[in-house]
Amino acid sequence: MNNKLIYPYTNMNQQLENPPFVVKSGKNIYVYDRCGMEYIDGVSSLYNVSLGYDNKDLISVAIEQFKKLPFYGSFNNQTNIEAIKLACKLSSIAPIRNAHVFFACSGSEANDTAVKFAWYYNNALNRSNKKIVLAFSNCYHGATIGAGSLTGPSSIHKDFDLPIRNIQHLPAPEDIYEGSCSSKTVDFAIQKMEKTILSISPDRIAAFILEPIFSCPGVFIPSSDYLRKLESLLRKYDILLIADEIVTSFFRSGSMFRSQEIGIHPDIITISKGLAASYQPISAVVISDKIFSVFLDHVREPDVFCHGFTYSAHPVAAAVANKAIEIYSKDSFKKNIELTCNIFKEKMLELYQFKFVKHVRQVGMIAGVEFDAQEIKAEQIVLMARKNGLLLRSAGNTVILAPPLIISLAQIDEVFFRLRNTIKTLSRSSLNNK
Image 1: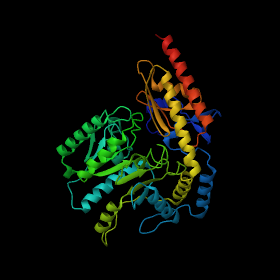
Image 2: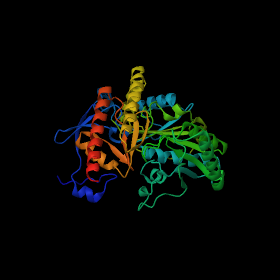
Image 3: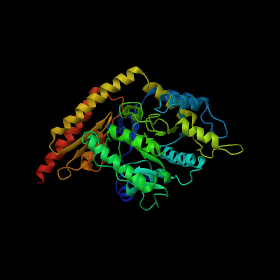
Image 4: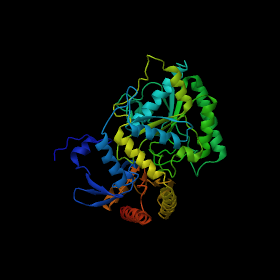
């Protein structure tokens, strides 16, 4: 087949030389290639297929909404009933009191919007110099012009003329992660952050965007104490806190929102991947009443709030998201995910049996196992695991696991059986080559 598809985050020369891995169908936590071979999806595609590949409730809701109203836009004080329902649901469950909600189609669009909202907010308050958005240099926030600028790794910026003006990256402190920090190291990191803020000038800083879990570099988990103290520091200098919960929300981190679990109260939260379990493309920007009230005071007739996308609040996507949240909110789902997370943690910790496993990092249903680079390469594990019917991802020399939340205990056993066999095969090969 003459392939004209441009693949995201793919080496274009390899794309021409090697046939792509093509998925033809999916069921439960499994996907099937063109030859019919079955694979366990150990990373929920891109951490987003939370409810598996054949959820009948989500499919039937989508079909029903397609028949009823396949699309109607939300510009000019018009919308659809599913969008209104979804906004109300998110307002009621988000860890922001009396929240208001804007819809987009992807995590990148949501983070772009969050930055625009931070700038609009400060312009409305006549603080035209308060525009810098701070972000950690090892975090991922998307790939559009705005979100790609927020993303830290330079490979995202190279040759795209990024980052744009008013985005400033800070190195993430090394001693603020769960399991490796103390109150002393956390306090030192906060003092250092305060010095950085003062050196830039708080009057120039609009917002700080962060992931409650740093998924991009290999699932690094900042301590709750650090994030709470960082929030207090930002409040002190009237700097908005944007929590990028694109990955962590809707039980990927073990609870509905990671912010809620660790006790921080962002001004803005961005969500996407789990929102409709990726059965439809949708994202949301959840903002505080404080921000919304400033918007209201600023926008006077005949002015309008000039931001939005054609497919914002798409009725089919909103209907599917409403059903997904209904599923997540069931007591049976919450009880099951708690048990699943505990077993997943136990299985991850058992990987320390391999002497070249350096670190295991896990929270909820996302985890990273970091290997000694001199002994074994994470990319090799990912390739070999695919041959063993298990799909994984790597970042640096860390292998990432994030299976669908509906995974059974027996399926968890099978994931780790295949992973252990993969590691054993490669470790034997490594020893033979020495």
